[in-house]
Length: 411
Ligand SMILES: Cc1cc2nc3c(=O)[nH]c(=O)nc-3n(C[C@H](O)[C@H](O)[C@H](O)COP(=O)(O)OP(=O)(O)OC[C@H]3O[C@@H](n4cnc5c(N)ncnc54)[C@H](O)[C@@H]3O)c2cc1C
Image (cartoon, rainbow, N blue to C red; front, side, top):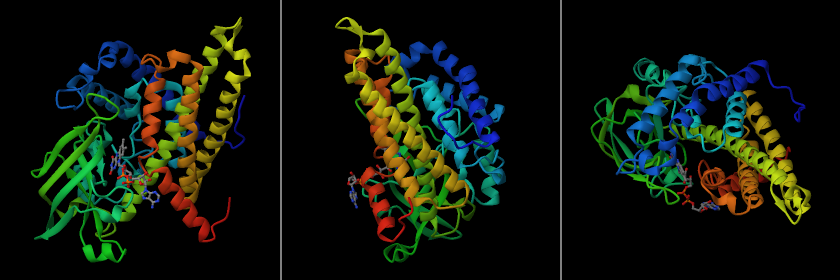
């Protein structure tokens, strides 16, 4: 049975089925073999909150195995040595991974190159020298990167960033700080955004540049790991930058035009998070439907009560709509349309309905819904965060309203 009339291109279907088979062969068994590690947070994190060596090793193993199999880098542009698949393949592959693997299989997050952990389309405009020196290390999965845009005083409003890159000889010296940098505690490289021309920033004409830097360079420090949701460690870092020297070859894209790169990165994040929300929501609803057929109350399986099944039916309807929006927005991007409004709608809607689906699945499970074993709480945590990361729902609505008011009324 198919629910979608739009036929996906053959290469997208092959990518989706291939990465799921890879996850089944290489990712899920690693979880099973290391279930003690994954079930004990004290084994997952070091004292300082970073991932433990054992976890970092497993993550690297998954990245490298996937790169060898040709999945990890399949959505990276061909100019960078990747498979050249587009945004649709990226959306479809992530959606299916989240649907099939569920939130407990954390290593799955590394089976396909994440847009910010690299390698990704974000690096399409690196210099030939960076391509030679850095790209091979990212492409083979041995190294990873992070995306350093947000700062303590600059989140939704990127123009408020204070990190400065001051000219020094041929290069620049970067000073400032970043926050919430995902993968920051373990990344080998960072795409850093800094003000290179404050006047241009004030005039809203550019003035922010992107640089790719090794995280072991003098002046680059991971100041702390930020645990979220009562976890004892985490994957978000606060970074300190002090007189960090960068050379012209480290520029990503044009000088003073980093804002466009930042926006594009966030767009990739919106596709990823839409896929994550739809896939996780579908996974949760499936779990809830299965449970409802087996759990009995008042002489019947609870699946017989419309009070239980109607919320799940509503969520299935919402997820179906969100999935169609995701396929549409990603296709528009592949066709060369900016899809600003459509992608904003897709991310905002997908996250809301994904989160609602997980919440309803928890309710269906009664008290069991709150146990760690099922993974529903992991999914809820992840999607609640996604409500903020890569554009809050309010900022997405602001963008949508702005487009509508400018006359973009096509729906
Ligand atoms: C788990 C996680 C991972 C992240 N990873 C990264 C990363 O790898 N790299 C990176 O650079 N950043 C990252 N971020 C940061 C993320 O991009 C920001 O959190 C996000 O842009 C919002 O910024 P803020 O948190 O500073 O909120 P603020 O911008 O301070 O907003 C606070 C509140 O005000 C609302 N608000 C602000 N302006 C308006 C307005 N005009 N109209 C209506 N409401 C408004 C917002 O919606 C929000 O509810 C991550 C965040 C999280 C939670």
